[in-house]
Length: 107
Image 1 (tube, rainbow, N blue to C red):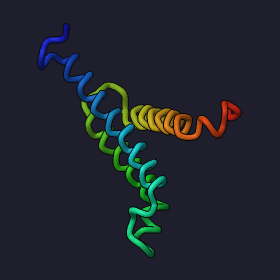
Image 2 (image 1 turned 90 degrees about the vertical axis):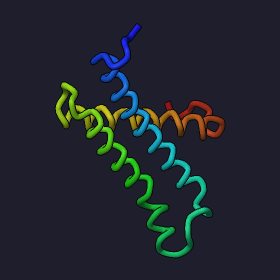
Image 3 (image 1 turned 135 degrees about the vertical axis):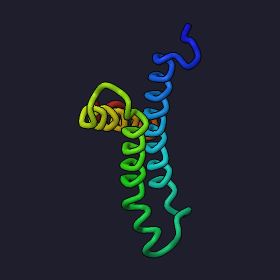
């Protein structure tokens, strides 16, 4: 069992929080794309619809890199790890969302 405040617990908490932020950004991006009628009309809504998911994901990855600042791997390694986590989360989300339509043909 991990002791409260131990270095291992702090490391697990930081990385878990960072990965949760990235996965949450992927899910927010899917909500923006699936419910465009909730966005404002005209240009602001179009900009949010087109650029919103990418901006949210970029902000989340930047936040995740900042949260894990005291960790061993450098910034490029953490950037690659969080981009991979976003790719996996996006793939799982799309597989769940369109699984019935694709019927496994895209694997």
